[in-house]
Length: 166
Ligand SMILES: *[C@@H]1O[C@H](CO)[C@@H](O)[C@H](O)[C@H]1NC(C)=O
Ligand SMILES: *[C@@H]1O[C@H](CO)[C@@H](O)[C@H](O)[C@H]1NC(C)=O
Ligand SMILES: [Cu+2]
Image (cartoon, rainbow, N blue to C red; front, side, top):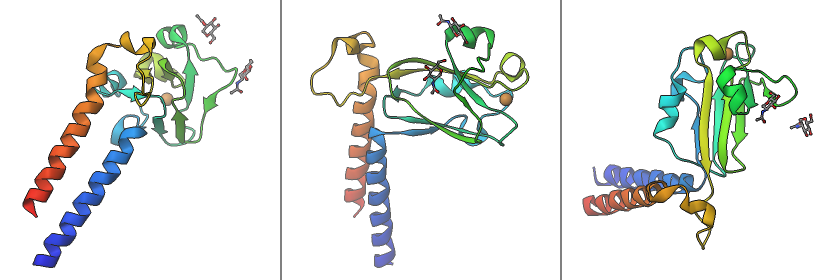
């Protein structure tokens, strides 16, 4: 009994430390379990998430059924597929978010973007680990800056709960 509750505690602590590590670079599965697919509301999926430089987007789909194209705002609105370059087709496409700003992605297969809502727009924020706040940060307001703080607070709260249980 005692040893099993001990290993449970150890497991929880390891899980927590993994979560803390993930705070610095999060990998997002676009569409969660549904993946990159037809008739999924990617705007709702993205709405409650805060993306930072260094995070990753993973687009999961059956290779050949879809693809991922990075476009500009116009391409996003009008579902214009620029076949020039940057079409991802592997079925597990990982995109590293390297610069802050608006990012637009659409599926270029058939009319999936126009008719099946296969389009994702996100805003990537600069990394908050910088010691001095840069002028660019202030335009995003305090709400976004508060999110990592809340997260760290939540993890700290969980940790103290765990030690209380021990
Ligand atoms: C958006 O991309 C298209 C090519 O897909 C290009 O023709 C157009 O000029 C771009 N628009 C802007 C505002 O960069
Ligand atoms: C995309 O094409 C442009 C010119 O059309 C080129 O400058 C750029 O390096 C290409 N990007 C990639 C990722 O191949
Ligand atoms: Cu598609």
